[in-house]
Length: 563
Image: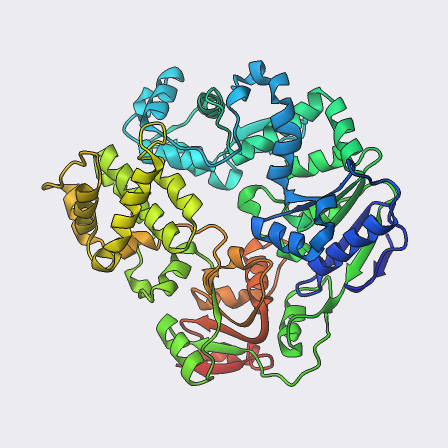
């Protein structure tokens, strides 16, 4: 296999071959992809008003970025996420062909989303599948139902099941949820025209498998099919792409296996390197246009498959390894180094949210959502959880997501939208009053503003729980999609770059990704690699402690500061 070296400004002379481009962070993958699309638009004789280029990327933010860079050419390109593309071009127009087989009410299909778990649906499912002995374990059941994924097996069939790494989630008390029953739960939603994001992959795969002419339509509409962040594809997505590639359509895969960090969504590290198509051509981009040479030295130490060449030839400081807690690290960056504008990256959502409000990490309660099960009032729990999510999403200007949460307690068929709006505004107006107070206090605010009769807290486990924990201890557990702040998880930073980055690690052991990197087999190492590669000018890594005997391992590439 011969690999051709290219840079981010280099065009391909032959646009009618499948290709795979491997490139490290900061190489200019998105820039190259946009320029390649423009090149194809200019030279191809296989495009017209009806026939377009399909460009698949991983997030809605990335979609907007590519559309903006394409400018006036965007009308000739279908840029979308894989789920959006498959839904619009396969599921929505053809779902009626398999609707009866799967109990899908296709006439009510209106997009794809996370599923809204209602207690009635769960109870009906348990009764239908003879599992009523789980009826008191609603929260644990929801966790399991949220964890299942469609998985492609060696026999070419797709099954809805828990990933091997989460098999324990299916065990409740001493019994396991019946594996075959997971799809029965999904079918309850399908009967109402509601499908999960993951269901889009399932239905797409079944449709092209049972009705191959659908593939002919896709190929006729899209003679070119380019996939950005290809390493994030899961086996079902890859299977669909390979089916499209069997004739006529040119496939282009752009990605970086070292940035494969979505195992929890089914992505498989090895599949980028093993991806092959007939007469495919292989390219590599080894320049780094983003980071300083001293940051790149660390990146090159961590990975072995690509040695990046720095493009920015500027004077720069060594990255810093700061030994201290969270507050000490932030103080040192601001006062010792004089840097006030920086992005903090954390492994967990709760940690990044805590940094936003400067909540001491010793106050974090990682399992607080699970502990709400101690409240035996389902109505109170649901209103509390949905309200906290709605408030925090609104504060991050995620209003669509905020109202989606409110619709779970104020369904649009029962409550006008202006009711939800008024409820949210009233709660937000009191935010400064309740944010640092107990959950019991917040529940009283909800009782005052809700049209529902929320059960009053009395003596018992629930009152003790809500008295003991603060609103902000629950709010930091909220997942903010496509977080645009400067305090975010590493996963949400992927595709971004920042002048200055601080990576917060939990312990000295986490530094192993530098001292003994194993990117091929260790996803945690790849996650930290992604984090440090976001930095353009200054990189800081923070750990609570470091054995003095281990300092020499880092002294070549880091300035070490003990707080």
